[in-house]
Length: 285
Image 1: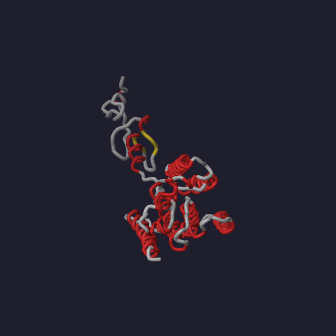
Image 2: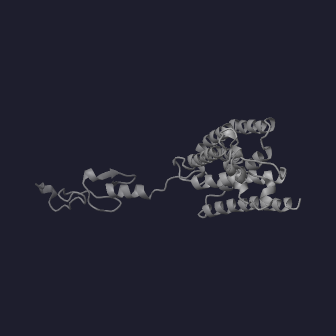
Image 3: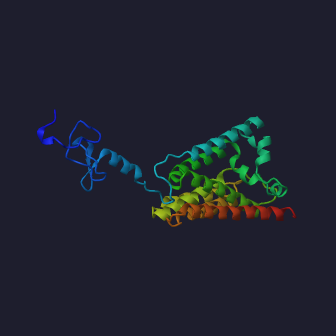
């Protein structure tokens, strides 16, 4: 039953049977106390509050990525590396000597064979590993670095940095290694992630001690332990840092994504040009 004092009052927009003298300060529609929420100015109905929340843009990371997204690219890359290792081990009939497999021989980076037309080797070699320890160490580093970087860079940017770093390591091998050398492993890409983490930390003005120590220790290991391609690691490190700098130092303007893509494409073109140029030179040796 309507109270005499409420006679002639409009009904709540969500509860028409409830006369009310209140209204939403945003849309002006009548609303009962149950349907109103405190706002910075006056009260808003629950519909306007919901619409306002939907329209609010979430903040972005230093690279322009949506924050809070869990890593997906990192486990996918790790799974690909493990799958390729399992396949090479099955072909070779040996876990410790998987490099004897046909796939390994077809994919491993040999500068002289790249010069002969095997253009895929600079990329595919980054998914091969010499034995289980090589695989485990690289995948542990990928997981540790990737779970920090992928949420900051975003999935697509992270994958781009990973791949261009891999090619950067291969480019260094093409330039400074023997035409007959055999190089494989995700280490160039992993060192690229180290360079990426260094650049991101500097951009965020975070403590640098642990990151510098990580890079230094791994470079020392690259020098001390025989059979490791130091030039490949350095190439990945430099290119990964350069790629990330092109992402996090681009100003936050409307066409920021286009500028980031342009920077990555330019760097990739330079790296591929180095590989192609060296391949052409090797072919005449």
